[in-house]
Length: 188
Image: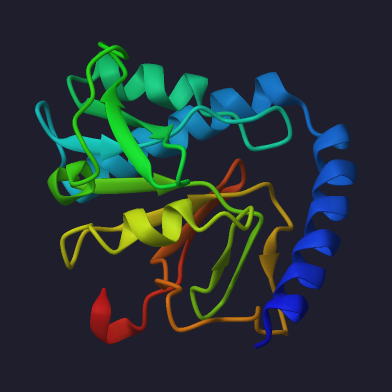
């Protein structure tokens, strides 16, 4: 797809998110996502010392504060992105935000919780357009689950999102309503 098509689709997704986010109960979503992330970590068998890439949600994004706190309370190391001037991502521990771990930190991850505007059933993720996560996801070890946190209704049904060669497919979508596994049965 041409970049202009992807940009146009991103504009529509942002407008839909503004409307959707205005109708959501952020406190309830934060609690629900924290519980669902905790359950996901348990289902994956991740315990103390495991590394989870996460992020600090912006106001219209599904909230991550509760999930990040629950992960840290469970003994997992939570790494948060720091956007560099070139829009690539460095990473810092939630517990020590002044410490920089470098762009290679995604290679340590046992689970990735990533932001996005929408995901389709083929695992195509559309983000904000800076390419930060596109680069970071190429540094994740093969087999590490990549889960995008979305609002209910942002998993695109019936149409594929524009995908470019640099787009890394994601494995699942997690909303306040539940987890949707997008991997083909042979990859589960």
